[in-house]
Amino acid sequence: MKYKRFHGALSAKFAWKDLKSEPILSLCLVLGIVAVLAPLIVIAGLRSGVLTSVRQTLLEDPHAREIVNISNRSFTDQTLKQLANRKDVQFLAPRTRTLAASLFMEKQGDLGSGRHIMLTPTIKNDLLLKDIHPFIENNHEIILSQSAANHLHVKKGDEITAYLNRILNGQKQQVQFSLKIIGIVPPSITDQDSAYVTLPLAVGIENYQDGIKDWLPQLKDLPLPAQTIYSGFRLYTHNINELPTLDADLRKSGIDIISKAGDVEGLLSLDKRLSLLFICVASLGGCGLCISLGAGLWANTERKRKSLALLRFNGFSALDLILFPLVQAIILALSGAIIALGAAYGAGQLINMLFSSVLPPNHALFLLNSWIIFGALGLTVMGGIIVSLLSGNRAAKIQPWEGVTAL
Image 1 (cartoon, rainbow, N blue to C red):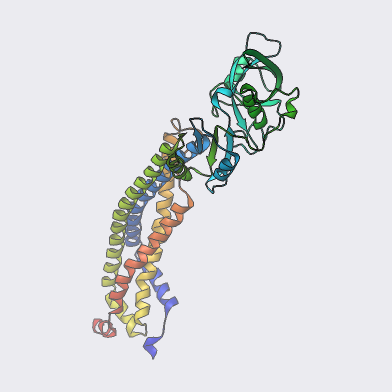
Image 2 (image 1 turned 90 degrees about the horizontal axis):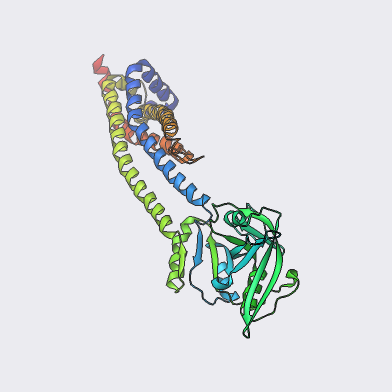
């Protein structure tokens, strides 16, 4: 029973000392791993950086996840609520008829400086305005676009006069009222002359122009009818991956819309193509790495055949000899992966520095994330373990008498 004892710790110790006894050979095996693995990590980092940069650019665009219908239709409250309750819809705001969604505005005390401003209804949790103003609570408050504010020569806190006209029973009628600017949205949100207003104000303006209701003296008294029929909507998905599917569903239902689904589909297609390209390159590189490491371990096993036979003669089991190249493979693979990660990180930082002048702020061309780090370590060690089993199987077949005949 003596030869069946397991000497795992001792075998691992011998494997480590064997690597230390031949530092040049061990270094060559490690550098062989680095030479194959480092370029693969750089490619993976470039893929990650490019895709992350494109995704970040889309996410920074407030309209990247937006869908807006482009032709006036009749949408009931119930229809829009059903659409808003979809799992892929994060926010939905109704829109009034395009021809009724404008007001002539001018700065108080600055006659002749006014112009027509397009109105966009907003409700609570509007994603476009979350960084500007949380919610427009009062009907007399508005948020202007930067373009509109520049043309009207106004700023946040100023008051403007709005003029609302209609023709009823052959007579031209006009009402005017004051609105307070509580925020200015940057051009990144919209470059048009537009104003964000409460939904009751937008509906009230539409009803007045259609001759449905007269104008109330106080804006705060503007009601929101329970069964309002809206002409459109604007909505936002939770993430850009959901945009193409929702876009397709709405078009199938006969709704004319505009969105950036094409850009998102292009990004997703790029992701798949880059992933396929990386898999092909990584597969070739991985095969080369495994062959290089496996050949080194196999050659080392053949060179140490007599020494391993003596270990068998002195009570080491076949499992002990299998462990010998296995431990060496893990040590070499980990060492090579760590050095390769360090080399790839340095190369990646150089790439980011060289391209920093042409990249947007806070964007990187090379990105070494945790998935790449742990993936490189895990797959390299796994590959080392697999190829070491071939050498281990060769070592396990060594017979004790081979060491005796060598003496």
